[in-house]
Image (cartoon, rainbow, N blue to C red; front, side, top):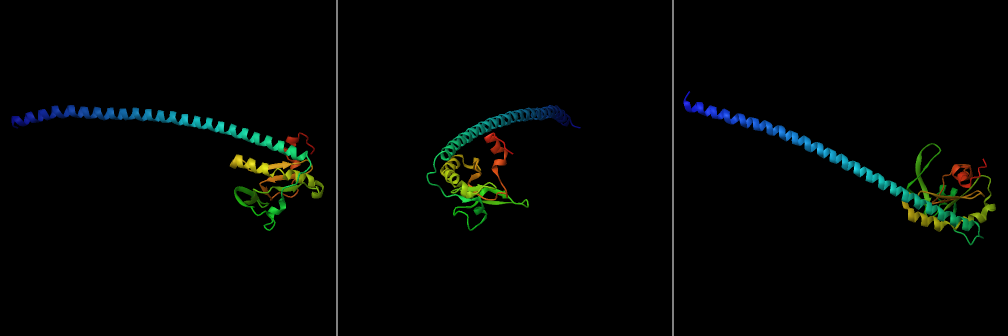
Length: 217
């Protein structure tokens, strides 16, 4: 082998070995840097996600508290208005429909129709869309109550129609139903609807008994 080839191979070896070492070291360094960056990104992402979740939870809690206060104010106003109309002589009346009319397509109010979110369950367990009216409340009489004997209560409670509509306009989709039930057995609901089970008497339910604090059954 000629001397120049020997020098060539010697120089090649001395050139490639350092290059290989540098390449291996660089690759390891790049992997290490990538691992560090990935870990740092993961930690930052976790911190960011935790911060977002915390802020979301705090905002949700604040929103719930505001909704609660809005409902309490709406309820206070409704109680005030109901007390006013029930303790005064009826000054006219507003059109209300018997709950049974909403189960009869011919008798329902003109504005009555199917609205998103309003569903009722049938006796066979099926759920169907419910016909409701946002212009007229529905009235239901408790079992044994003669409508002719409670005409004045119906006339008085019908005057709450505008109050119902205003509360719904302010609370929007956060509100589903508004009920007012009297000791005389008159039950007014807004929006107006039917679908009540036979023998329905709100005075037997816990929400009514808790409100009156005079359980009788």
